[in-house]
Length: 82
Image 1 (cartoon, rainbow, N blue to C red):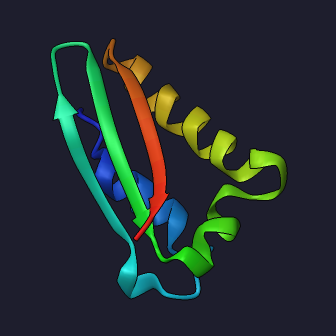
Image 2: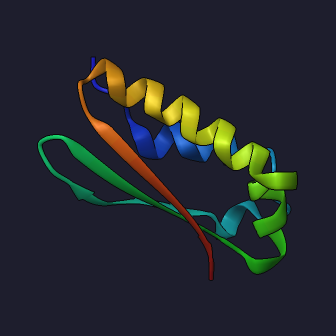
């Protein structure tokens, strides 16, 4: 069963942001072994998504890495603001 990374990241982000309509998750590149995911939020929500000391961002990356390792792939999660 393949992991839907866009849905996974979006479900983790939605409860954290004030402006859920402005969240954009897209897969930029999907090679045989590497998947690059871009997460875009509003500038005002960026701090909420990254968290103090990057804890929330690191936790999200850990969850996404775990899903990718089941498929034998590597994932790169890029977080940025509009």
